[in-house]
Image (cartoon, rainbow, N blue to C red; front, side):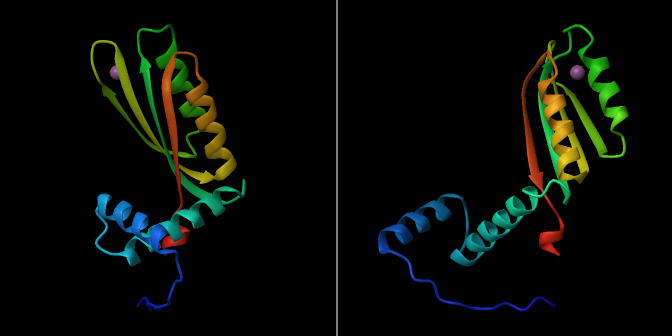
Length: 138
Ligand code: NI
């Protein structure tokens, strides 16, 4: 059972107006839920500042599968890091481009290394790592 605590915040009127407009545009029903998300996001960022912390992430990349050896290179690298790679989803977007989404779990430094290598592979047009954790939400 989660115990909720209430507390007061002092904040400039202008800043609160802007905050309220922003969170309304993002679909938040109240300030408490928005604040909880901000707090969790800070905790995740803090966790990701420790290279040895346990974390979770996804890498999304776009690439042209016609480019020489790229599919083989990406597959080879993922097999090498199978311990950290939970799953990969491959989508053939059109005749040329593929979208690949890779889910990872492990130490921050390992996830970051794998993401840097995959995104930096020649032929990958665009890539992003989404960094998160689970411990902060238990
Ligand atoms: Ni494809």
